[in-house]
Length: 391
Image (cartoon, rainbow, N blue to C red; front, side, top):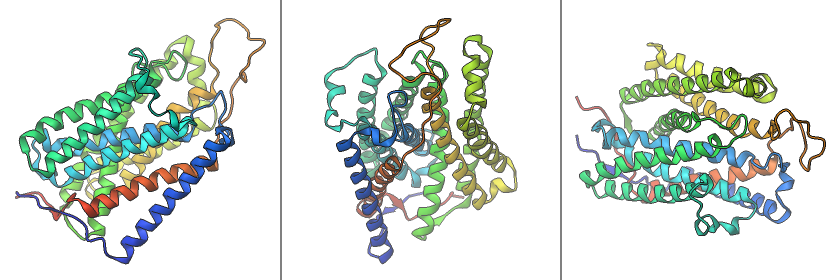
């Protein structure tokens, strides 16, 4: 079945209002970023103990969305599922934009965005902070080539680049997971974090694609076969279970080891983050959407599939918060079996709350990415005229 792609018309009042809203959001975020740059990151409430805040949480989240969104294109390009071809160009364009959002979040969180090229001029092969910039830039280049091959309908090249893109995406997210998993401190160090990151990326990326496909086809009044959404829902259900498995094993491992048991109890039952874990990530973000999707009745209903996708994205966002924040607020045991009587850093468990400046900055980054995505729909043939399963 031949798939035809076209641009959106982009001449309606609603289109110009949406673009104006996204542009204003971007401007607000840039103003907030300038204030944080000129006055210092201390205005956000971040400290030497908690130097990673909302932007790093979102950066990890966006990298997962980028890697996970490629799943849909790989179903067509690698596994030959031609019914998913209508979504392939959208998924690759989102992969590029979400990685750009992640890089913007990281650069603006530095406090010194003028030092953007330092990681490339001082390469350290045993530092994940030095390796990852190389992984990110090459990934974006591969995705651009992948998208170009799709536009030119070079099917053989598409299959080759698709395989390279998926393998590189696994490397990108494994590298991001290694930033935390290879750090020798409680609540960070874990060899399971890289594959756990990939599992969460698959679930969040697939859920996001379901939402994007649903919204775009509804707004542009394009024909969408409900059976495609049901199949994506079943795929999402499997990814949710796999992600939950990694979380279960990782925390069971922490509880099993005597040296990490205290930190594990703090993580699971210690405070606000424990509520985020049990209610946000486990119940709302995993158990409920999995139950919806595995139920024969609700799993074949488009509104229920959309709801489960929203809950899954929320759950993975909670999981990203739990990866970044508790490991910083919990004290590092630098000297086992010894008492620290004096330190330049605040001792014990500290608190962190997301500041208004960080929220505005995050809205600005989403505004930039949203503006570029809608502009791309207007200028390039990303959307299919219809998406159906051939009989």
